Image (cartoon, rainbow, N blue to C red; front, side, top):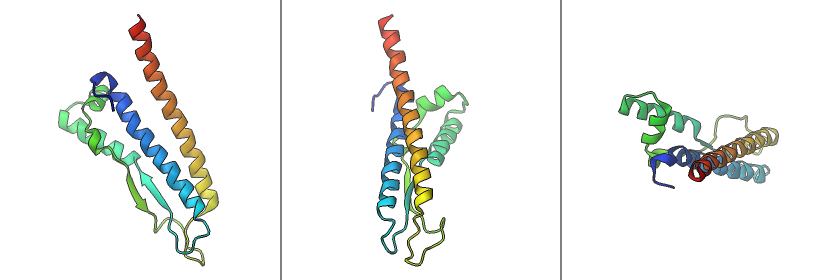
Length: 134
């Protein structure tokens, strides 16, 4: 993590990339355990954590500017919440709740999300590069 206000967006994007990577790993693990009796799918929730951090930061600094909110966010509190999913899917006879089709769709979606985030981080660094060369 880079500690400078100029890198606030990159630091938040870094946390988001970590959560996305963790989610892809968890989905792959779910798929690997599709035939394991009694296995319950696992996932991570990051979007609601990010939204809550942005709301609480906005209220704490009494400002709705995204730039100032991101600059003042407490990155230590910006961690995804991992959980075991007991409720979302009907249980199979073997009490495993992993649905291959659903997991594959979620994995593809998360891979696109990760690629977009990576491109965004790269763009941020390109902007810094342009500014430093000027």
